[in-house]
Image 1 (cartoon, rainbow, N blue to C red):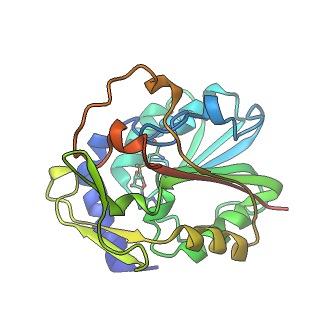
Image 2: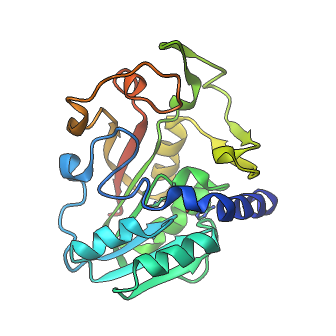
Length: 251
Ligand SMILES: C[S@@+](CC[C@H](N)C(=O)[O-])C[C@H]1O[C@@H](n2cnc3c(N)ncnc32)[C@H](O)[C@@H]1O
């Protein structure tokens, strides 16, 4: 666990949280990506105990509540996000904790049917410990489903609609964004290869059920594909997966 990075990111997340209310929340798995309605990875949610890792504004947990989950638990680094999540979930009894996902704060072990994380797991400063913790939270037979930026996506840049490879996919490490979301909010985001995620899941004891490199959701079928050089664009998403989604099981 890298305490300096976590403190920096926590203070920056408190500043930018307002940009992320209900963004990247279920049934969405990520920008332009097929939704849960299209992918159907969760099987039955009704009556299940679920935990959201990096629960943000609580909108994915709200989706779980509406689908009949019997217990809602969430962890997030930012107290601003946790405050918003408690408001989002005021009609349900959610257990919300402000903590880094990489820290063992005594959450119940072998207890959850489903642990999931929508666009948050890649923030961990210690993937190995985080996945081991998540594995420990699950009951045998329980599933872990997460989405995150496709690891190559950060290297696919666009100039006048032409896509090109920027930097090295081979180098793992971190990328520092001094002005995340245009705010004075420096963020440090780890950069890992696809194989690192898969191998760390296996090392933590998971069996991989599905690996999805996203395609564009059918809801964009009739949308204009404007040429823009934005980080996320329909033009780019039609040619390259924005998101990786992995479902893994604890047997
Ligand atoms: C894009 S948001 C996630 C949205 C959320 N999953 C949803 O469904 O609405 C990313 C979240 O990860 C949280 N985060 C960043 N680093 C974290 C860490 N090390 N541990 C726990 N949460 C973290 C941020 O505070 C932020 O709320």
